[in-house]
Image (tube, rainbow, N blue to C red):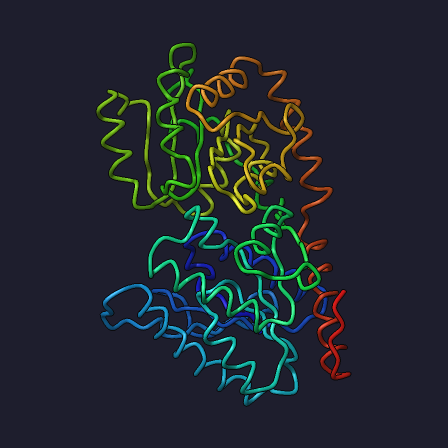
Length: 394
C-alpha cells in the first residue's frame, strides 16, 4: 500500500507522476498495489487504473490556519481510509510505502497498528530545498522527515546526490538506503501529431521555441532563465514558453514587463499533460536551470521527447545528463545559460546529436520496467526479513 498526497489528476510536483508510473509498472510485474491519496474535483473516490487500486480520501476541506495543520488533518483522513481498506484485505497487503514527509503520520500509525514493515521514499529534503533549517516551520518538516526515516525499515532515494543529503540532514546510515532513480515512459511522447500546427499556437513563423517546465520557485532557477532571455534575443529570434506555477510567478511577470519582453516570454501557468508533452516534442531547446534538484524528472521528459537540453547539472541532474553528450551544462548564471541556449539554437547538427544520445540514454537506463524491478526486489527483501523476524543491515 502506497501513500502519496498527490496522484493524477492531482499533480503538484514530481511525486504524482512518480507514484503513478511506478505503481502501474509494479502492477504489470504482478505486484498487487493499493494507492491511498488525496481527492481531486471530478476524480472518483475509488478506481482501478491498470491494475492499481486507487483510494482518494477527503483532503480536509475545512479552513485551517496553515499548511502544517492541513497536512495533519489530511493524514487523519488518510489513516482512517487506509485502516478500513486494510481491515478488509489484511492478508493481501504486506508492505507500507510512504512517499515523503507529508504522509508520515498516517503511514507510521498504520505500521504500528497492523505490524507491517514500512518503506519510505524521500524525494527531497527541507534542508536541501532551503539550503539549511532556519525557522520552526522548517524544523517541523525536517523533524518529520527524520521520524519517517527512523520508523522506516528501508529508505529509497533517487540519486547518489540525495543519498549524501539524506545521510547528512536526516542522519540515515548507508546500509539503510537504496538508490533507485526515477523513470520515464517514452510511449506518450511518440503519438503522431502535426508539429508545425502545434508550434503555431505558441510561436510565430521563424521563431525558435525555448521551453521551461517546472515550479516557479527560487530553487528551480527560473529567474536566471528570465534574465538570460535578452542575451539570447540579441542573436536569435525566439520565444520563451514557461509552464508552471509557484510563489515567484507574479515577480517573474513583473520582471518580464520591466524588460519589455512580454511578446517574447509567455508564462502560461499549468497546462494539461498532453499539451506539455507536445511542447517538449516541439521545443528547439528545453532549459532546466535548477539551483537545487534531487533528481530532475523534467530532464527525463525532455530526453524522451527529443528536446535538446540546457541545464545547470546540479544535484541529481549531473547523474542523468552528460555535458556535450546528452546536454549542454551551463553555470547557474544568466550569461552562461544564455550562451548554452544560443549554441543549441544556432547549431542544429549539434542539437540533433544531443537529442539522439539523450534518447538512447533514457531508454537504456530509465525505463519504468527497470525501476519497478529494482523496487520489487526491495519489497521482497523486506517481506522475507519481516516474516523471519530479522533485520540484517547490508
